[in-house]
Image (cartoon, rainbow, N blue to C red):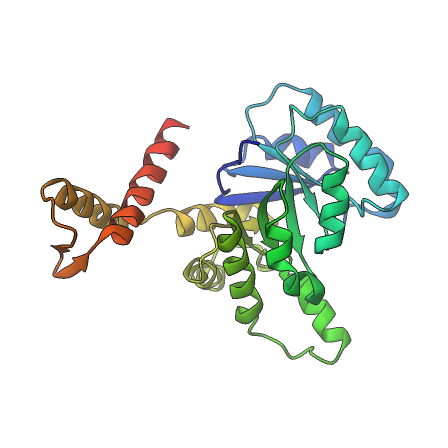
Length: 276
């Protein structure tokens, strides 16, 4: 199975709105998450599924993932049957409220790779086992639902979710997959969104879910390598080429193989984006 590259920005779009689905194809998102679940009212599920199917039947250059309803429910099973007809058009299925058992059950039916949406305390505890399932290509933190679960047991005052985020990032890295941060509820770009992006980036997330197009510029810029990082990486690779020594000095800092490997990943990410 070919693993998709991590998405710097993943834009959620409710499948119940043909207008938003159409406009989303012109947005500068790394990928779309067409939402059949929480973003769609119960009465609109069938219409949303038909809209999603029509979108997948088109020839588009946009990377599309699909968030389905609970696969054990009748509506979720209908979502999956629709996706079975479009396995070449969609890149992955986003599994809500993922646990190890729910992920294994979805994967057992075959079909698309899975992005596991970690939204519950059980999912956080299960994060490593989920990430290790063959067919899982990434984890994503559902921070809003997770906070709601904490509130249900008296944790409505919780603000710092760094422990849960760090656990998800580490579990993903241990399994060799990527992790995406959950969305910011602030819809417009501004200092608060910038700070949220910086916090998620510093924890090791590869990208972030966006719930409004106005968030895309901040998220794309925030998760892109900075000019300073790119310059540093190129100096490291040049210094490594110029010497056969195991450890070298760059910018008055010691550089050895793990640092060189990191620099190469930064430069490669820039080259891949330029080719896209």
